[in-house]
Image 1 (cartoon, rainbow, N blue to C red):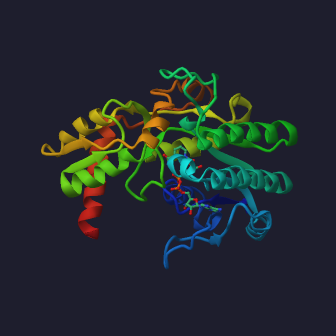
Image 2: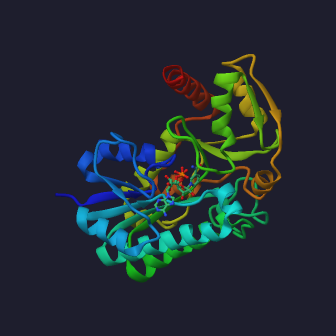
Length: 318
Ligand SMILES: NC(=O)c1ccc[n+]([C@@H]2O[C@H](COP(=O)([O-])OP(=O)(O)OC[C@H]3O[C@@H](n4cnc5c(N)ncnc54)[C@H](O)[C@@H]3O)[C@@H](O)[C@H]2O)c1
């Protein structure tokens, strides 16, 4: 029988959609979801482990108990929360990854690690940001993401651990609300537009950032982990993107479906400063060449699907 997959931080925005997608491929029993939070009663089909990924022995125990062969390590503090709690961000983002890599080394597991556009900084070229370029981020989130990319490279080079990763842009989704990132506005706006026809945005109208619809994000993770290892030169930090837009442009796309939608702006200086230090658009040609990456959803297709799916969900839950 194939060894199981373990997902840390599985109850978050990405994990809540990655786990079902992995279970569809590997069977419910083949994927162990885990989180430091307790799962809601009746939540999820397969095994769930309560796991604090800053505790080495807890990871070791779960990996042994379930015979885990690959760890998708999602647990982390996101950009805005990490700026508010930088010490805790270092402890969780670096401490968690270090322990996951150690256990992967000891038990011969592959590791998926999600880096971010936050791994870039104000001195990085902001348009068509190259795969290999200056990385001097000015946020604690960014510092942990760059260090994590390097640590994953090190474990691959020094110990032969099969580590792989993506620099994900802001992810837009309707299943689980985001956990405190700078691109969260692009999710909140849909909830507010459907419910109230109004949204007060915390970024300036002209703030351009990279984004991706969650189905593309999940597919990118799975395709990278399936890729032929021999072809991966940038194994731990592939730029991937699907679209880039400003709040103003997103509002215009929403207005095509909800014509009376109104956006105004109450700029949060902390999140605006983070956004101003990030790329406006990424060059993802290395991902396209090395493992065939190609996104499906652009701004129009994502907006239509979000309004459709979220509208139906809010109708049944409210
Ligand atoms: N969502 C995005 O737009 C985005 C973009 C780029 C990169 N990423 C990265 O992807 C990963 C997952 O992001 P997300 O959006 O799902 O985050 P999230 O905040 O929605 O979820 C993180 C989960 O980790 C759990 N967690 C916190 N501390 C933990 C601990 N000590 N042990 C185990 N679990 C713990 C939380 O309970 C939460 O369920 C993160 O590394 C994030 O930096 C996300």
